[in-house]
Length: 514
Length: 108
Image (tube, rainbow over all chains, first blue to last red; front, side):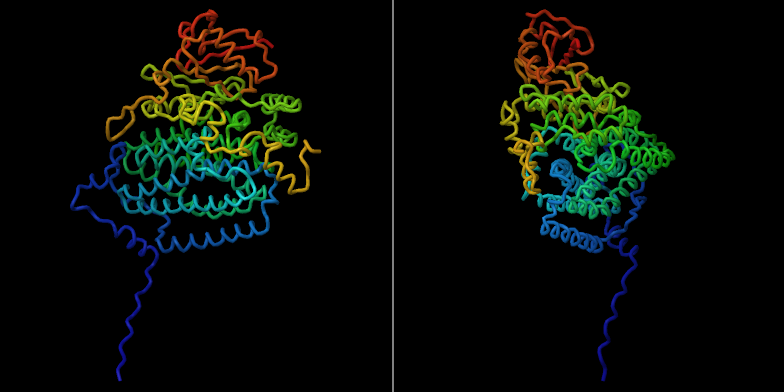
């Protein structure tokens, strides 16, 4: 009797070989169309690539492996979300005012994850090499997952607190959110290589620790386990994204010497753009976390001065890349950045979708400890004045319409920054282009403006749009309605609905009732 | 340096003077008062007189600071230059154009 021979099972291929088969070997040379027609966007920026196969993808991830890892991480995250929700975890936060930091995150950062998802999908189609295309594809899926997990995580708070509603509408319309939005719009309307330097290198590599670690450690310190968990869940993706940023810059620099000056200008521009946006994080770190993690200054020294200026840039010098053009200005303002930015948020929170408060005496003591004389001399007296006015029943808000604030044409932050050598003198820079005047907040933003004025004159500056009548109407309530801001979302924290609920849940009474 | 693009890149400015018709934008900065995070941005008629601008626009804004006294204003600047317009001059006649920055100081 004969039995049919069992067909021999194909051996599982080693990872490197599988990766090669599933990515590079699926690439082909076009024969029906010219290469330029298939990849129309990779030459006009002036970048020269001689060998796309020189792009090494250090992760060699395949789609099946990718989905397996991500599914495991999602399972862990959603288990934490469930248990936090079931055990009323929100009651063990440090304070309800902590959630103002999370409002800033969902309105300012989460929509950027979605924008990144869109643009990496574009790169996954239009970059010429199979390795960078595949890396971009994975990152595109990552970014979508980050956007979704953030929404799922943070939406749990919406049952108990004001404000989660309308965050994506707010991202498109509200004045302070035009800071992150316009940065991404700027990057997405640049060419594919500039986008890689702007987002993958400057944003995800150079400043990522400054931008994300404060939020995630802040979450952990203040009892927000769900936010901390999505931070961890995203971390392994982020390390891949950082590696893509570093791989991109090294690849472009190695391909042709002519690329070096182009890349240098992009590093100069995007360091300053991303750094200016991080100012919002500085204000959040020092003023919005009831239990602070570390000061902005300390984080800047550790993550930027030591790790980037001390570690990365000496390596890049080999390729002819110098530290970013305006880096000295950033270093010079580390003592004052957070105070100047929180002042803006405090002046304007009547028109925001978060609440602010004059720093408590404990917070003042901490700020004084962190910043020493710089705080005591220049910022403490103004906060004392706010406290005095509030003790008399007032609250200083920058008056509503028709008066709004002057905003920088490039970074779109209100013009509150001061000269690097004089913290009492607002830094005004002015440029002329085609008989119109443009204002910028710093040498960095002025340099960026004058490099490409045709681009920045089109900026949708929120204040000017309100004054043009394009934002719902001429009064504050009309503008807030157009923003999607509802009563309880904005203004002063003390006495706000979130504050009152918090006191009630913890068996305390508000000062007014007491 | 111009924008690198695959096509001719020429678009109008979003806030060009013509968009505001008979009005214009002006920025007002109170030098040395950190209670206000930044200069104010206002939309005002080009033919508004200087005295009306000070009384009806600058003063109500500055009064956000309870210590403000209109008679304590000691001097004005237009951008970085000293500036002392006639009360009845229009903003245009005084040289305050679209997106001009006017600054003032007060005596303590």
